[in-house]
Length: 79
Image (cartoon, rainbow, N blue to C red; front, side, top):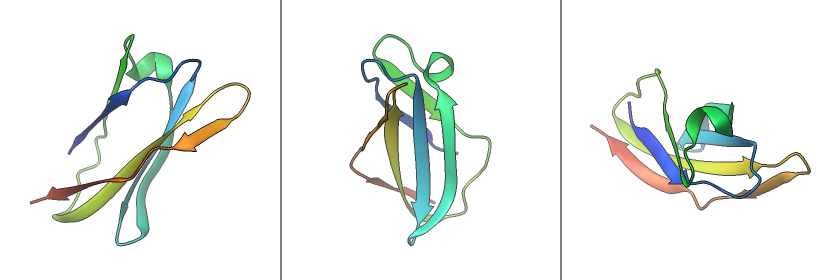
């Protein structure tokens, strides 16, 4: 299962992570920043294994005031 990492955002209390394949959502979860982030970096590794294929993932920071913009989708391949 891949590890997903990104730089933390100021004031983000949660992050929404979406993993998709061929425009179908495989995972869509919201996680508390305090559980996945250090001072500058956030890292998540899900227990769910992915079948071989091509995937994309993106992340969205969430503050108490509003949902932030989505990151650019990044592609990866599971062999």
